[in-house]
Length: 217
Length: 217
DNA sequence: TATAGTTTGTGAAAATTGGAACAAACATGA
DNA sequence: TCATGTTTGTTCCAATTTTCACAAACTATA
Image (cartoon, rainbow over the protein chains, first blue to last red):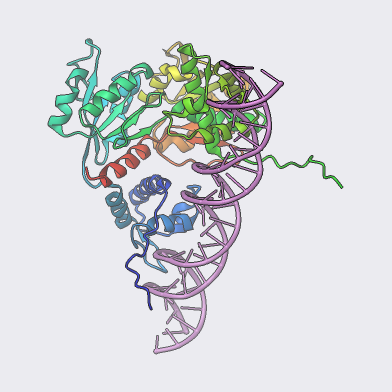
């Protein structure tokens, strides 16, 4: 008897695939700015430390976006990846902790462009609350619950000291945050339905030092 | 005939192992500060999203550091990992670009503590050159060659705009830098003997948004 | 000393991830 | 229209990475 293929298993991809899609997207935007209309998998991966089959396979998990014998339309593929990542819609972000790093992130062009916008800012320092920074009024951290609910914000960037990071994470989650971008050098404990990404500079630096040191100065 | 074991193949480990060692170290330092003397592989991994066999195996690539039936001495293991990573000696770091992010990194406690120190700072803005920031005098970027050579600095943090990042990387490499911690959202092209680690915030954020979006808001 | 209870270190299995190869699809030019 | 050359999408295979399971080593207690 012939087996039907209804259960054709959609092969699952690595989370690394998603990270790479983000890289591809950045590159595509650069190409677009330079006026490039068509790009091949070979060209786009040439300087990315990624193989061209890897690129094609990453895309294949989500559909067919190229034309054989030709390549990929830069603009169209960029839009498709934006759709895949979900950044075709606007995402509002709350930032907690307006110290040096928090202030820098408020000005960071990588965020303010496109559809990822820091729209609310919190701090616990009375000297900062109600001041305006980069066009945004700093709110009391104790208002986080009502503000996130009212504005329906699900993403929180934590830029406070490692000692306070867990407490802030707890407050954010209580206020229905679902995703945390953590800049504090500490491991956060969160429930399973909350996503955490760590931007861990000292970890990157130490990894770098290991390989540098091993190579003999 | 009995085979000698001189050629016992030291199994090779993943680069992820190194990244995890850095995480373990941070945790051990936290435990030490809280006065904990002994820790088991189960306890230390409990909140790290890492399994306890993974922890033990990661360490096993470098030696035996625990006592069976007991666990690991917190302070001793921390020192051993510092030795493995090479951060038991002091590493001098140059920072290029004293904008918002660069200024924040100068104050970042995760770097200034321990043996990783930013000792030189460069910028190309005449208004900033020769000013002192966080106790360090900002130098002209054009002095990078002689300064890195003279002070024997091998690690460079790049905190400039994505447009200028490649040019800065080229200058740093020409000045004999061997490791680059890149904060600019761009992929750098470097020779094979230069190590690059990227701290890529927008990439992390977009990965986060993907999973958040997929989960249904 | 012997026994029971822990926890490490590690070899082997399982799972995941990346790479190579190739058929299918398209373009071009004769 | 046909042949040639190019590039994608995908299957299969190789390599890497993680997990599992358990012997070895240690403590504590009777």
